[in-house]
Length: 168
Length: 315
Image (tube, rainbow over all chains, first blue to last red):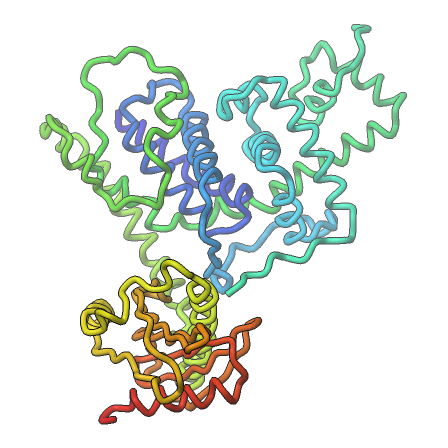
């Protein structure tokens, strides 16, 4: 169905938003999205029309990400620091520095981060999250609860760990 | 109605996913537990902050690379007959193929797939055209930011300073890699080299061929060192060579030779100390040399001079 491809394309911005928050940097996130799109495209014939394209693609992305984490990778340095970034639309009153949010998120275990982001950014139902991540509903709820509390404490504490140094 | 409120229900309250029948119970609970109410409010603020932080990505132009698979359109062969209903998340997505760097598109797998219905091409052409159009649009933006991202394109970049900085980086890297290779291989008792000095001619010819430049193994008999042999090593961007020498007492020196210097300058001797290992190093055109040993700076410097003299063109 042509609309299958159209909905795949329509999901790309969401995949990018999630991947950016999950990985904390642009280059790696877009690599992950690219692999997801490629794999999704190859498997589009096995996507059941009428089922949730978004959940299906996020599931693919999750599996790719888990695979990536199992492999040791070379440390890379993002090259996009000078690229123009869309203006962040944070409410000034929120008092949350954007970089702090990035850094705090990255301190969560990645399985907790995934649950929190699917709920908070994607506004998925808990059942959808369980489906995408292929975990029981109870695990979704406990990870969500832990992620939120940990993030809350991280955002409160003034002490921040020094960013990792790139060793040349 | 009166069953105790659970943590899962409190989380659901944050996300407006609480079953309507339980809203009253949770609201009552929060009235009685202000600490908990504050905690849940913080979580709601957190949700808003996450969206505030990352929603901007939704408005960014999609990088052209992400649309390439769609533009190529090589692999998707729509099923003609309804297939057995797959699981909502096909287990095959769990990564039979290793998740590696993005494959070039189309992949061999896709190109080699038998029986690809050519008749569907006409059906898909409009879609591919749409993807190409998107790609062209994104390509315009992509080309623009790429232009700005390349250091060489920055208006304020002074080419001379850039070359200098580049040369400094290469030099430091050279000394470090040489010291590391020395520390790794010089203590080897059984396999200090890949090819021994008894096959010196073969060794030199082999390494010259691999590095794509004529090499020499300097003779350091006058300094009390004889050649043990050499090996090929990975350098910064390709192969590099290491020659090893030892003296009568078994003390070892290594000479690390790379042909990776792109700044194409000549430098004088420099010295670096990495732990126990002292390194004299210099660049001569595309050649980078580093002599490493556990010796004092003056002693190593004398030998470096002898090496330099023998490697000097026309020497």
